[in-house]
Image (cartoon, rainbow, N blue to C red; front, side):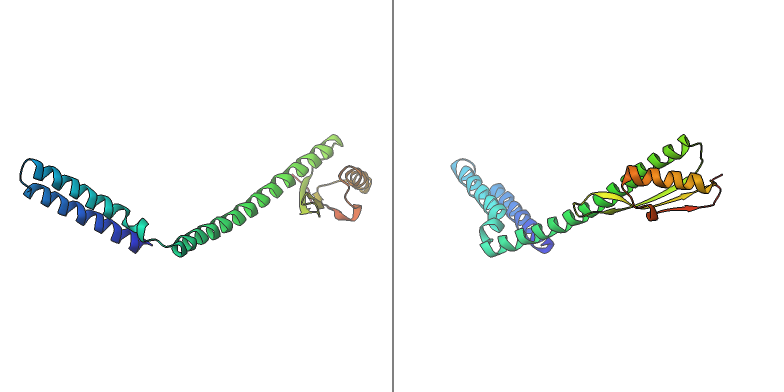
Length: 164
């Protein structure tokens, strides 16, 4: 493709140089005007020649390559978008849980991992909460999160790490 463009530019440049030489050698008057017209047509022909030599198969090949590239880029962008959306949703759930623990007077660290459900929606799959809290507080928080987020209680884990 680059080779083809280079050859095209070389042809247009050569035609322009030849046209300039022919115009400078042409006699004044009507002969010069005819020479200008012919030189303009030669340059025009050099510019549009690649388009005239293209075949339908070449055009199909070019459009197929472009479509394949577009398809690949679309898949990559969708994948990036899904990852970013998952990260945002996890952060939102983490912030919600941190607010919930703060309402209970607890200082914790939270890690939420979301998974996509059958409808393509990111929902919490597991929650890990770290911090110093009693087993009653853990159970109260586990029940509240299970009810509010629809997550099975066994998917909520606690660690005894101090969050300070």
